[in-house]
Image (cartoon, rainbow, N blue to C red; front, side, top):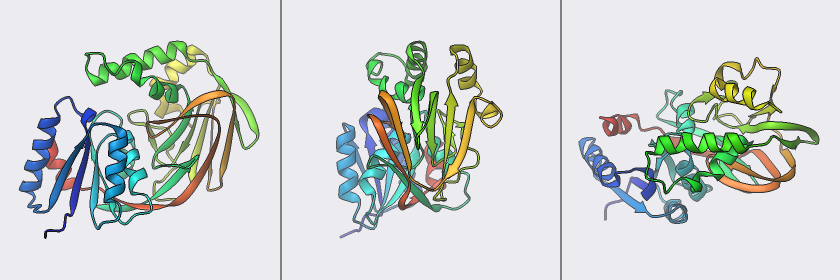
Length: 287
């Protein structure tokens, strides 16, 4: 019996041409001489989580094929198991992979944070971007390219959004956005937390205070350039538990997965997971 080394988990919705993606993975594995691999296609996020749980106890590299959301789901299935997490970036929001790819190592022991018991590797946020994630289902069935749908959703959310009162460890203010960052990148490549490292037990907290619509528009467009220079943006680092309260029931998101509530317990370090960056395989897939 051949022991499987590489397992690829693919959600049906990560590509407009899932057959092309699967054939590309087959061809790349054969080119690299991978004799023991398996590809599993699932129809929904619940199936993806269950498949990851079933793989968690084996000596495997379990690849999340997709963007931050798929990586998050597979992480939550593998956590506290023996399998390694592999990342194959597909789609628009591959912010965790951007942080991972800054390291030369082929694998890295990455810090895992938790929010209300759900695990994450990159960013937990409240505010405008969390609402964008929550509004995805309003647009996902439209017959338009994925990237266009993302920008249409962003515009819709921007026009409807109202700043909210949020408290961090009993310090309350009205915010446009609050983010707890285990990774540096956010919203498709903006470096929102330049002092954060994914292999460190500390996280960065970024609070964007009560911006006007005009300020929000320009800040969202040039987020990376002004994060540490704008009076409206407060940033600090911590390795201690963070207690967040809100006046209203709000959408939160952890790596694209929506959590709704008015109280959020963020634990910056609940453990680690070994994450594999198989650059040879990713290069083959991109050819």
